[in-house]
Length: 313
Image (cartoon, rainbow, N blue to C red; front, side, top):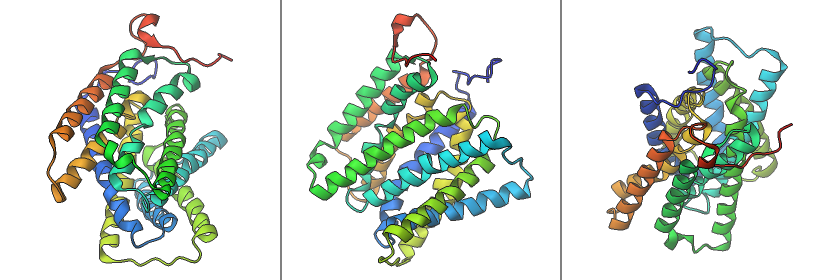
């Protein structure tokens, strides 16, 4: 952290390790979600995942006597984030994976850094480096190229893809919103409470929209749910909020570009060989992410930035 309280632009070894861990875990969650929703209604699956994660994190917080949120502003921020970063986006994603592949979901969600880069100056009045924006565009374009053959969608796949894009927009807004509102709140407590409130909202959705569907908890579904709960939720989100306090939002959002690469490699490991085109795209994506992580907002002259400022109040 800098003396002014802003995140430092210098990435330490611990930051890098946390970043890599997030990419590996979240790169595997897409396949796990796909396995779960094959047997369990999507909103119910997401609700169970977050309820279990909330129980584990809040139990840990109570055991370690971590501080709870104080004041209306901290509690309201947690409630807002529970809806906008968990309940709505993940409800849409779990639902969408009934109709689109896990790889396609991952590549569509990789648009998140672009949306965050657009929202950051509008919501925080901070510029995003031109090199970072260009790198993000190049990376996302290369991912679209990789999946071009799969973009010939059926009506259901198109609807599922649209749901993922809505989830991207809502999640991107939440990342920027959370940046300056969770600084004083313990990461474990904040994450556990968001999971709890998000689970309540999703269970309401289950009651309203999935009353006629019944879950079949097969062994693959249970194993996938355990992975999603322990690693995809508890471990990953705590690391995510820890990093969010120390990195710029658009930098941390580049995990959404690396995640599809991990998802592709994982699928290739189990199902098929990696073609040359995929290798080229992976190299482009990783190079682009490296550019974004090295970019420093606020350095250089005003001409070096894409200016997307909103009106200053």
